[in-house]
Amino acid sequence: MLYGIFSDIHSNLAAFEAVLDSMKAFGVERRVCLGDLVGYGADPDACVALAKANADVCLIGNHDSVAIKWESDAGFNPYAKKAIEWTQEHLSEDSLKYMRTLPYLFEENDICFVHASPMSPADWVYITDLEDALDAFDHFSGRYCFVGHTHSPVIVAMHEGAIPKIVESGSYQAETGERLLVNVGSVGQPRDRDPRACYCIFDSLKNSVKLIRVDYDILRTQEKMREAGMPQFLVERLGVGR
Ligand code: ZN
Image (cartoon, rainbow, N blue to C red; front, side):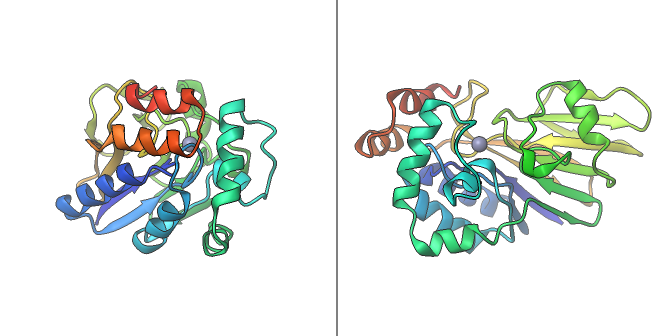
């Protein structure tokens, strides 16, 4: 099965459309969204509708959870707060209804999908180093786990009982007995200093993963954010991917 796995769209419609087109071009058979449909960008409703229409599986992220008021924005920085308040005012009843159905975690065969970490999914734990990765490996039983949340794509491979290693290139074929933890990056707000949209293609027959980067119209997207009154910091960071 050829999977297209994507996360952290953050109301960036142009980036999301570009990623959907790219997945189509690669012949992706199953599309999995790891959450954070909204927050930061100017097109929350359109992104929720597109996810609903295109994702075979869609999970909830922390920004989605605040958007539908399952939890407060207490942990957010001032920019994220401003954006999520605007988002709450602009989400339709249809979008809210759909978002309330989204699960925290989904597993099929030997694959685990979750927004932040398989360790206590609703607590939005950040996986930022190998120690965090090791904790994550302890909290899923299958061979593969795909996460988003940090907006920094990375592939981590681990043989049972060994120390996990970071794969330096953007693609990898798992060795026999090896397990993978993959951060699929962010569609709508990359933070690894590459402003292009990011997602992951996973071939479950070949045991291979590949991080894909896709160009989209960043200038137009920034223009829309300005028109919506989003903080300047959020507009500018899109252009540099940080
Ligand atoms: Zn996010």
